[in-house]
Length: 301
Image 1: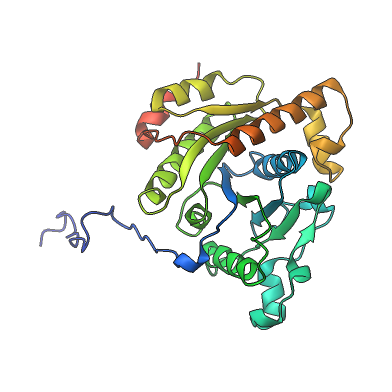
Image 2 (image 1 turned 180 degrees about the horizontal axis):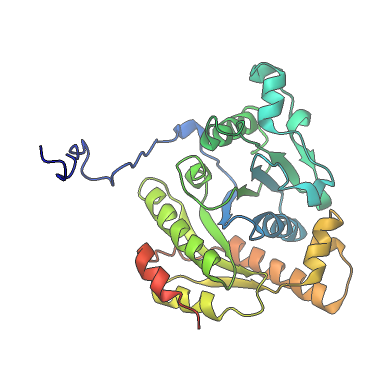
């Protein structure tokens, strides 16, 4: 074979799936029933946990029974609700040599602000394991202890953007996926990749896209331009307020930060978003752009 000949690429056994695609079907017994389930995604550091926690409170203000599940090894999704860093499901399981029958609900479920129930799934040690396993074990424990039977809303707050099947695992349980973005290149680029990931999961699961939340942004022009181009929808706009930054430092949700007009306006935006999601959204099927196309599309002046 000449040295410059291209390598032989083995033929895929299943030509109906993209190269490298692995779709593992969820055990039907793990399906979350009786609750509306939402998964929150977005670029790392974009404010998913802040959005998830305040959205959880908004649902609770509507009288809904809410469970928020943090899916990040940092286990900081719920600390503004509980005012502490909770032990993770994986830590609790490890302490009991992974004997689930020895784990009690109070070991891994804490009640947070306004009655929101909180769980931190955690994650495997760095460089080992898979986040999908962690999500599966968390849902399994919740079902074994019948903790989902008295729940109206489940919110998965998921680490970073979707780059593998493990991080995409909550989509197997969700009814709708919500993407948190900002009016900048990196956030919209990540949103485009997440839309593609949700589309892949939607081929085998009932999850569909609800829309996006423009967070920490004075304007939404680039977010809206992207949404118009691919057939997506912006559901809410949360400005870049110092009160939001201070809420994280105070370990508090926006609903505990006083009654200043700008804070009340953000609270109302979260309540509006919660009502929209509860009432039901049309399933969106946007067409994500190819990487090179979106790189050109997001050419800011």
